[in-house]
Length: 130
Image (cartoon, rainbow, N blue to C red):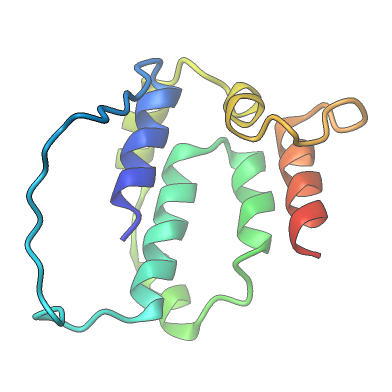
């Protein structure tokens, strides 16, 4: 899960952008069930992998607070996974800061008293979900 969000966010921070092609025709394989097990923990891990590779370290620290407590198996997978090579590659292509990213995609996030991106992000999340 989270393929579209991951690819889109990586494209934006690399300065490429994303287009919505409303006239595109897309086929989709429809099935009543996945031919493999899909659990909440898989989705949670994928979201955390995306956060850990795309965002700057201070932003990662703030965002991860809202996923805690991690399910035990997710904690194990995170401990066993080395994101460093992929993260380096993603970060080396960065052309947009987290501040710019959140300003563009979360324009109503607090900005005046929360100048740093992670403070803006944290304040916005707290406003919406607490």
